Amino acid sequence: MQARIATVAFQGLEVRQVHVQVLISSGLPAFTVVGLPDKSVAESRERVRAALTSLGLGLPAKRITVNLAPADLPKEGAHYDLPIAVGLLTAMGVLPAEEMDGYLVIGELSLDGACNPVSGVLPAAVEANAQDMGIICPAASGREAAWAGNLEVLAPRDLLGLINHFKGSQVLSPPERGQVRDAGDYLKLEDIKGQESAKRALEVAAAGGHNLLMSGPPGSGKSMLAARLPGILPPLDVSEALEVSMIASVAGELKDGTISMMRPYRDPHHSTSVAAMVGGGRNARPGEVSLAHLGVLFLDELPEFGRQVLESLRQPVEVGRAVVARANAHVSYPARMQLVAAMNPCRCGHIDDAEQACARAPKCAADYRARISGPMLDRIDIHIDVPAVSALDLTLPAPRETSEMVAARVAQARQIQRQRYQDLSVETPIRTNAEAEGRLLEEVAAPDAAGRELLTEAISRLKLSARGYHRVLKVARTLADLEGAAEIGHPHIAEALGYRRLLSGMGT
Image 1 (tube, one colour):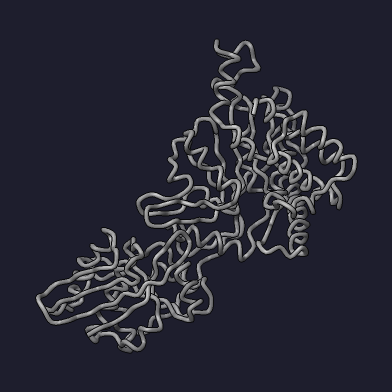
Image 2 (cartoon, rainbow, N blue to C red; image 1 turned 90 degrees about the horizontal axis):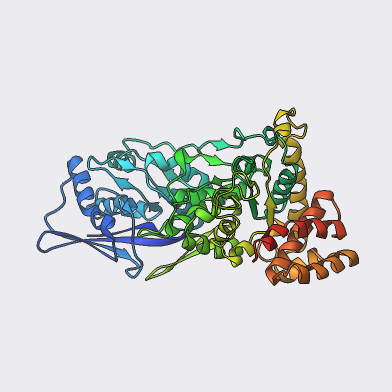
């Protein structure tokens, strides 16, 4: 008696189809799972055995072999429980083999036969839809699977419900899609008094998707500014929301199938490890850079992060993808996030105030800044100084310009960029100026004669690297887009160069 059930394995966000092959043959009673299973998959034997026993279906006193093909692909996770159980029930003649061929199965089992939710149901359902198959998943994951398209979704609460459905004594109703969260309680930009230059830089960063570094004393409002960035960013479109939700699904953070149109905002603590930041670990999963995909990754107190953690951010910041090298495979996760970082000018934070500065000033400032490498700083487009807020600023009324006003300008600038790159028919979709590279950047961000002359002079004076030169062009292109200007002029280049002064002051 044989059966074959389709399921999946995950390599990053890539979904690899796996076939659970079940053979019940004569011989000494045994239950063996082969095909590079990890510990959680090998333990499926006991969960499946107990689940079937709870239904009054004892395993036959024969040799049972379960092969997870392809055999050279590592299998991780408890989502193989349900396909193994379905394969056994099919081989035993309890479920119809011809009907099971049309389903992809994923889910974990309790000892009483209940189907428990697992991560990765959404990308598995997308794969099933692409293969013109239906999907069988736990009831708690059904609302998530329903987002994958026009496919049949069977979401039983337990094994008995699944058996009864195929026996015809019970009908499993198709689950409805999860909710759409299209708005949130964003913090308002008008809550911040003063810091007009910092607000301008925040608007520019939002409009072009640029990375931003803020340096200033404690209490100057750096964290407040970063927390208000999501409120001026445009919402995700449908395809972007699905892209972000697939990452959250693999990470197990997609709750009740709710799809959010809000851009992700992640702010990990400075004690975060390399694996937690870029992904990986024993059971590879997305890191913070991927969970912030198409959104914001905020790193407060940047120099306090470990040196290895900061250096591991170089590749994701540069190419928008995190690649984790493992012994048997390379796992890749999308990480097109917007890096926003904040730091004090020195360890005590009061280098510019002689009364409050520590006894090691100014050497403490140089030592503190040296924790961040020059190549890492060079990858950040905008560097701004956020001075302390004066007592006069605090007594002023709230600013008249609201987050909604700034968000409208940001949305208009992003629409200009989206249309520009669509018209150029680039192979890889580009959403913002921050993603433009090489010849494409030189084509869309060529300055006029006055701007070119200023930029040429600044290259030697500021000691700009080739990367720094291109970052200036990207920011200048965004500044022109905010004004609705077709050509980059002298004022745009001048303002973009002003956002590199802090970097040159750090001696990098």
